[in-house]
Image (tube, rainbow, N blue to C red; front, side, top):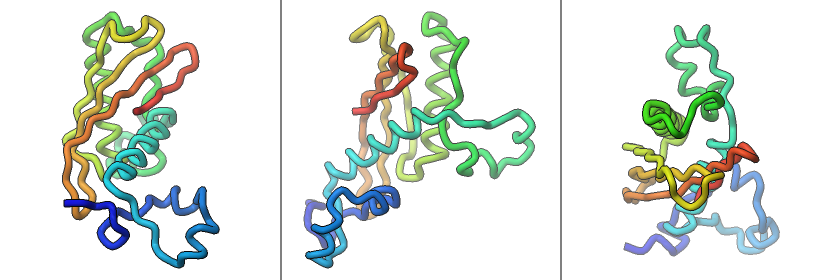
Length: 159
């Protein structure tokens, strides 16, 4: 099934609607812009990159409030400073925390699995594979993203 036409495509997310790169284009057409499946995946990758590059401020004192974990107050990932990519337990913890954060903060992605590819590409870069089920009506599709963390810049890149 093709999702590329404007009637059955996917809506832009809130931030894409607010920060429209082509406002005059839409003003002239007076049509609600829809995304095809590839544009939707690119949008999800962009949102994942923003999520991974944001650090949450969750403190131990807030753990007694379970709804806080899924709120905007907890947006972002934990800071993994002090953990080692050479330690398998630390790697497993980092992957579990990233997967948990993605599932809590991006409701379009379910069954998220994150794995760390030690020794891939560059020694100055950690390479993650993110696999999930993308659920956006009317589509349900398995998706995979490559994420790279550059410790020197403390920045994630998602493709």
